[in-house]
Length: 84
Image (cartoon, rainbow, N blue to C red; front, side, top):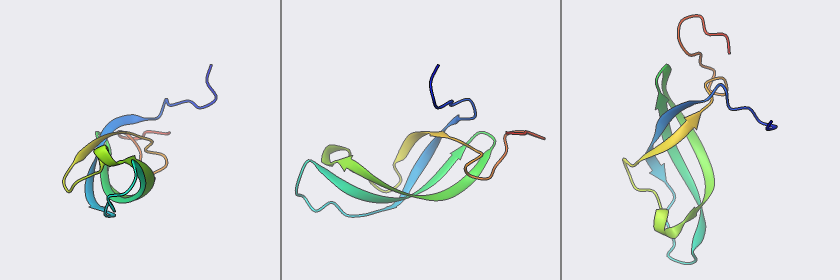
């Protein structure tokens, strides 16, 4: 049994709409991304993410990234009358 349950998560995508530039130094760098996350039952929601990113995986505009979304953290519900 794990400490963190992922029962409320839904599979979705995060579209990259903004990001910090890569300076060309180092294998990993901090990246600030503006994303629009969406999934079935979750309306498109703008979020900001700050993360370490490998230079070979640096985001580009319009890129769709796979994500697991917790609708409760976005203030959403899934389906009519969902109580999560």
